[in-house]
Length: 152
Image 1 (cartoon, rainbow, N blue to C red):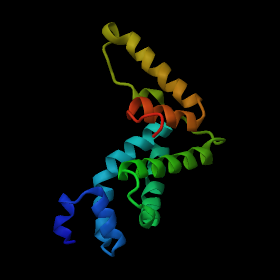
Image 2 (image 1 turned 60 degrees about the horizontal axis):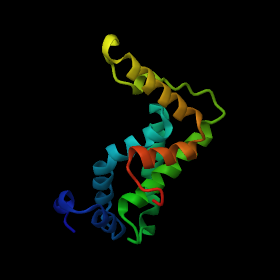
Image 3 (image 1 turned 60 degrees about the vertical axis):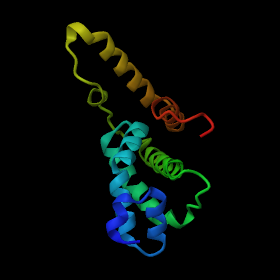
Image 4 (image 1 turned 180 degrees about the horizontal axis):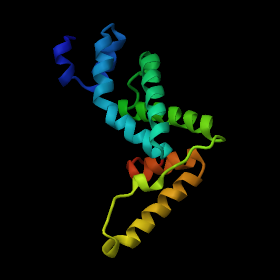
């Protein structure tokens, strides 16, 4: 596969190219999916610093496990699992440490007169999400926010 065609290759083709000896294919894949990995990590962890760590861990895991993708599922489903596992590892690592979650950074700014109830609701939801078990939070994020089925 020519490097010029990486832009038009599917995720699966990029991963196969990497496994076949084209290291730039993985770089192209990670650049393409960077925002996806970041948003999942942030939704799972609720903290930008922890999400960055999970994103790095997920990138390393994709590098190490690329040869394990068999195509039995969608690439995105396989990647979801890797990102989820990395995020849960980071959550467990910092579970007992004093990590401050700034709920306000995840709520939009609204005029107080028009949107105070919505702000309060969003803050309450974010606070509740941060208080539940990381595995339960991940399941809720995947089903409610990402639209996956319960089976997925």
